[in-house]
Image: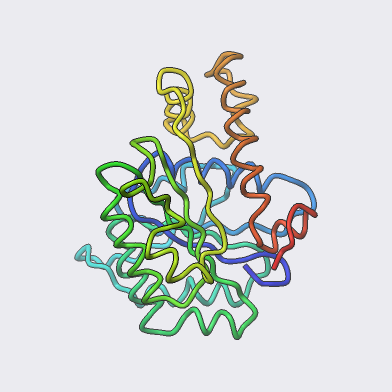
Length: 255
């Protein structure tokens, strides 16, 4: 996204409910009048989930050759769209394209190019508590070391709190070292898996945005109400992020 009206957002470590929640959020955030244009891109070659969210009008970026190998040169067209378009750009990557994309960004100094062109790059990185936490933290460290961009960290506590020996994420070495570039933390607390958990799972399986949940006939009143609670909680946290999209709404400082 351009700094005058938003920011390009990229990032993904693993396919899970958190990432699908982010997709549902995009639909809710983009439907409001007065917002800058939203441009969504799906580069996931193995599971094109984002493109299934119809309200987002997602453009599929094919980066595979005929031999099913990743051709990182195909990222050129994606970056050129960031340079040409105004608004907010969101890129969804898969496990097979995440590492090539990060390498492409680092090798071609994309963060610097975008910054000099008035485009703000923000990487959204999910961290999952529990068994996957170590791998997620290591990947976050590599991203911060290799790419000179701002980062929003999503802490997913569905499988456990993101902590280490009683230390919270804000006390981790990776946060302390890079806290000047970690511009926000969105903590998703664990909710009752028998109610909220199943409601979120149903919403993501149906590929519904939060806005679509209110109008679907696939859900009854109480599941919809619980999902409204989730939406309010997440949107309140997003409203505190220092991004230009919030400044347009008057909900943040928009730095």
